Image 1 (cartoon, helix red, strand yellow):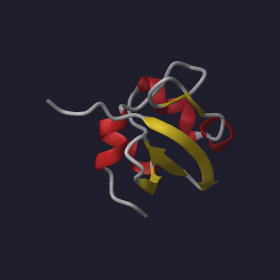
Image 2 (tube, rainbow, N blue to C red):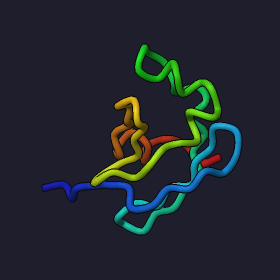
Image 3 (cartoon, rainbow, N blue to C red):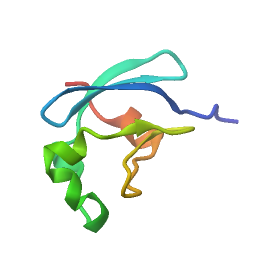
Image 4 (cartoon, one colour):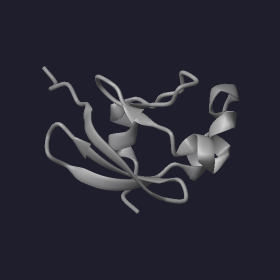
Length: 79
């Protein structure tokens, strides 16, 4: 059985980069600039909107309802 993965902390770095900490202690900086496709992510292409993320119970979310699965974020390369 796989352990559940979730984001425990997230801080804005610059551009579209976010420093993430996961519940297994792994820390990484991911660049989401090329991962903001689809109608719900369109407003996040404006940096002012992108920067307003928060950590929910399990991942990062934005006020418009956009979120990214923690497993997806975990799989992204570190920048």
